[in-house]
Length: 531
Image: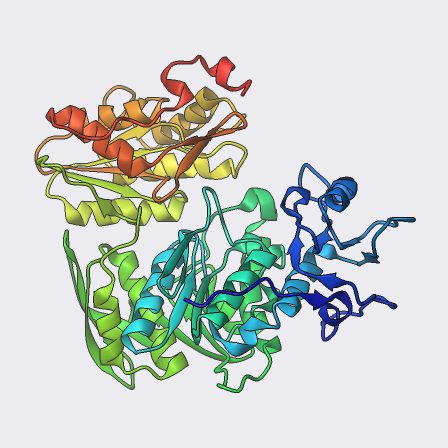
């Protein structure tokens, strides 16, 4: 893959062609990169100072200069800095456009497909990517799991949502340099609310669903929905491209809370998908098994058989979303799209089966919202011929309302529920688990019979395996592909898949990996809360 060799661009050129008024008298200072963290500043960088939740980048301008910054942008007044300072009305919003300009507008050279939603966006992004490859396109992808640029796969981090704006544009520039033509970009509500992807010039926007999540940060469901709807608004400001741009919005007819709003909101071409016949693209003759799903996708233009290695009704929806976007947005033959769907073997940490010879099913899934847990448990019910045993927690310092909702869902849909840690951060883990237990008890959960609290996640998985008998399914939900867990202010290396393998090895008396370490294994809660 051909990579970029540290481009250098004048500050004045970067500020040209932006969708907001540029300050007067921008100097010709040469810029070799953009940074928002003073520690990442290298000689020649433009340092963009922004105020965050707990820290303010303006306080680190002197440090950025010490590290070699060639210019600084921010929204405060500064006098007598030894380098050029550009005062902006909104540095966070400006960052995405500055980064796009610095990299010579890479999205304008690519066909951009944006995928958003509460649940299913990573799977849908991967399905679209596989369809593009099957159709012969030179495609790349940026998801919460990784960035795929040709033959190179880059990890996007431990607890990452949409990468920061300048990182997104850097990835896109690398894709252009590698000769790619199409990109699938998974976007989050945080990414849209913080303007990280505003300069991505999307051609096609896809939504999976908009359910309960992140209300602590957005304030209300309406605000959360509006943040995600910016994907479809952005289709209106995408510039015409030499390769054309379809400006197509793809929405979920089955998502009662978002469909009517998005259907009215979208001002460009739109098409919907769903399980019911009234959808523009719908599913018929659905068959479920522990090995995957089979159905026929039907529209007024085509009828095609779909076979997927993914499981659960929600993945029928994800397959329909990917099929609809590529067939109607890019003109891909439905039979070729079906080949792409079949080529996806699975997604790391998404209903991922872990088998070491046990006589029951063990699964790791990322389900960390009420709706995601619901559909995971429903899928588990179809996969097994015995009981459904769920293991999950709820994150500290995050949406507290969903704690009770998730526990209520498990008490209703699972046979046995084990509550445990999921990134407690600086909150009381015992307090979080008690909130969840109250929700489970309200739906009939019985402590010591169908409901247990096991604070240490490794011990919780081991405990759940001891409950399992032949034909059952054990689902460890909430962490999926993530590679760390936060206790206090520290991220500890943690992989639920490794933990499940370690627990199964101990359960079966066979060789396997060691259980990853968490402070809950050997410390009292008040000790790890101190960091």
